[in-house]
Image (tube, rainbow, N blue to C red):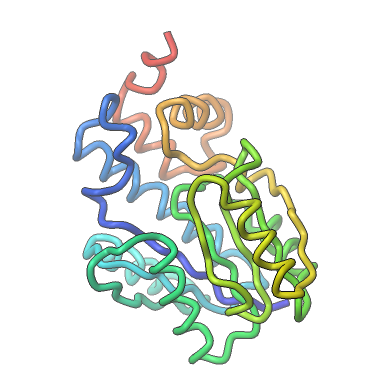
Length: 229
């Protein structure tokens, strides 16, 4: 099933506050920018993605998305979110825009899952059909790293701690078919120092999986690897 990808992106300066003890503000911004780049590549490489909507009030994210749009066959647009109110609010704005563009399915993705694999996303979208909601959990099984919905506004997004169960319950109450669908390339999002360490380990052995993020971690230096010691 063809889908519109929605990518909510916070202001870089406000992102990844839980990494404050490991990374300074410029390092966090560089990491967020790199991860977003790899997610955009994965999303636009997927054959079942008809367009990408980046919802943000961050100018650097807008410039990055529009620059990638010039090299991509998949249309990318930036929808401004005034006030940077939060992930669920930004996702909702993206859903409204996707519906206005005629989307029958949306894939709400996280900008901090740079391992995103286009083939895996294609396969998940291939399993979609009208009336189905797929909740993609994080590696802990409690959060939500992607939410696939047809129709696009089947339920209101409610990201945050415990959101995997919350999204599933909302979908069941609304009468939709629900699938909790783990996807390996979307299991790891980078919020904490432990996540950053895990990402560094993965990319040390396979930097081609998220090349821009791998380069950013290399530029940061020994922060992630040193924190493991």
